[in-house]
Length: 347
Image (cartoon, rainbow, N blue to C red; front, top):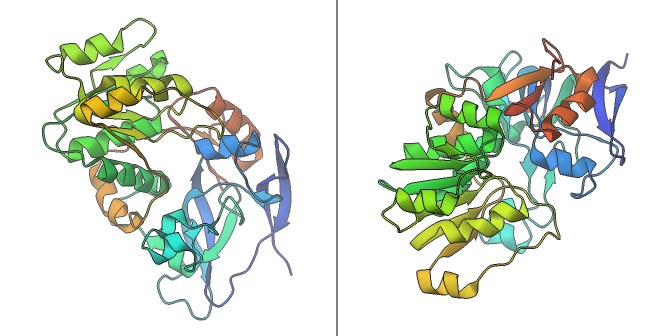
């Protein structure tokens, strides 16, 4: 008898459709997961706005964790009952990026929660090789952040954040705080935030980052210069993904500074950059996307990062649209779906 589950399905419109769909039993090399937590990413919001491609009808949610419910006949890497996180991407292995050691840039990439049914449902069926068992002491809820944190690790490693660096982060949501945590682990001496949302500035300070400023009332360039002897920041990260912060980022960087575009900006949006500034200061302007070979490493580090409080709101799968609305309004830090409960759905 076919089992049914509740799922939030993207059908190509700007709203999600709550449906009962069949649970896909695992094939020989697959794993069936009972979803514990799936968090909403900025990419998910852009998909509903039709600014990023997905393949409807599909269950969204590419940041998720859960318990193994069943495994296929050939699966030996996990067993029912295991607590796991999912690295949701699969790569073709044949395109140029794959063949030069950069599979995360795969031209024919697929992903659960984008092209394949993902985590905004009670169950998900995935390939066994994208399932990672959790280290001791890491709660399942926090494990849902592993995909995002893997992306953060990629960005921090591309920037080569080092001991004594001053790091400026434009945008203080969940990604901004996680960027700060990894920059701190790399030895950053001071971290300066720019965040217009008062509640988020308070949250940033609650995580121990006292230098959190409102760009509406603070001249950030003056503030950064006053704290760096007039030189500027070694590292500047746009974690907001809006034209204003992206354009501001190079202006805040010092000589030999590194600038990272991390926040997801909709395709087609443009900014102006003064080439002479990049030339004269020998700036490195970088992008980072996805999480190349970081998922295992970040899971080992996560129990030591102090991630309590990053996920601030929880919704049931039947309230997924309300959860998306809350995330779009910038409520809290990170909004999560708990398809099998419990949830508060208060935002």
